[in-house]
Amino acid sequence: MAASDATPLPIKNQAYRLTFEGWKTDGTLITSGTGMDTEISGDGGTFADAINEATEIATASGVYYIDLTAAEMNADTVAVKCTWTNTNAMPAVTILNPHE
Image (cartoon, rainbow, N blue to C red; front, side, top):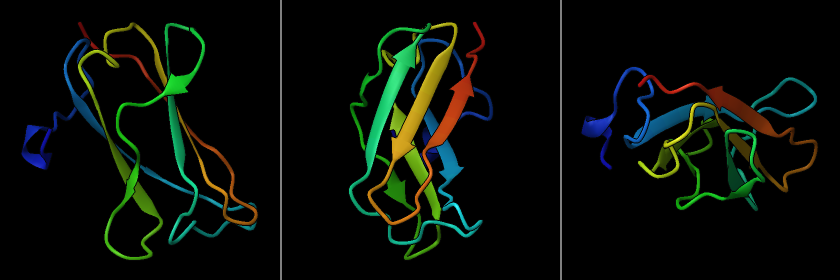
């Protein structure tokens, strides 16, 4: 999936680019995130590793994106969780309800 493929709304069973921020407990962004692990849960199922890993936009921006596959988006509720090993990093959790 390329940025040009991104849709403004998540659609069930269609690849989707999710963009999100990474935050630390002190309210600042996680820049230069290390040890990232992105996991997905569909319809309340067990979290499993995402096909792709989150990527930071530019250098030290604190803003990340992940390209979710059509298979990962084939659920009524998709939970995406990204964790880092940076000190004081909080997990980033996004809940998507793809449109049919």
